Image (cartoon, rainbow, N blue to C red; front, side):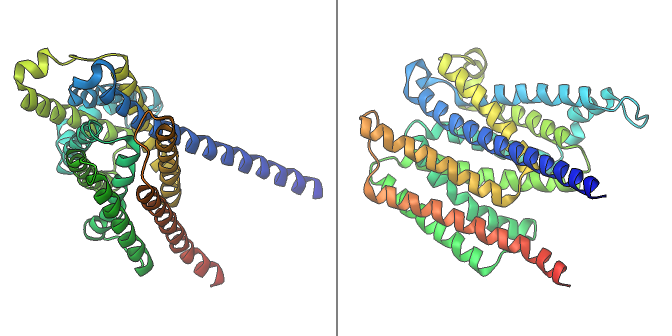
Length: 342
């Protein structure tokens, strides 16, 4: 009996180690994808012929490739022994107009398209670290919107922490405006607002539709292609938007496309596998990496060195985000503690 218990505990320890290794690998991969996404977009906007490329084309190509990935996944993973469905039926769900143009699917498609394009536009006047730090204001905005749309509850300490994040982001924004980058900040503001509403609408769709995760992801990307193509033709005219689709593309734009696709699916995978607390902590690590790169570039003279006030406010944003993660963890653990004590 003792040997059986020892074997069982050893097997459990191996499973836990494997799970921890998987989580560590997932977090590392997400940070690399997130940082790579921001840095590749910054390089494409400031180097080579990529300066004048149509930002909408990257969003369209990213969504198109994501649709192909989603369709192939649905076809390959459908259980052939299940008589209630077939691979073809699952693929049909991906393209069904009633799914693609459902209000809770079309809304995130539109908002994600605008958010993605606005982010790429912001790199024309801001660096990756500034966009990441100012964009952190979406945490309190998302909480405020979720309070009314999804009826989520937050503690007073969490609201206070989010207020401090807002103030810190406002300070960083004011410091950035001081060096003449208003256009980039307007793009970041558009990116944040659209991303908040896109995420909340998508979350509601994921929870209430009853459709598989990959099917909904594919539905959203199909809608995103439609809206991004419409924006592209509106911005550059019908002939310029279509005939000049790949104008000024070079290897830097290909890197942006690859980084965009990897970041898109890694984000979706991380949301599915990790807790909300883990997401906040991982985002902090991404901010630290990007800001460290900005400081390193400044010391080498390749970029303007962040000022001391900017550095101090950046540290505050990171610390307040970690504080919010700690409060969220305590809130998540409190029902479990109450259950165990009962």
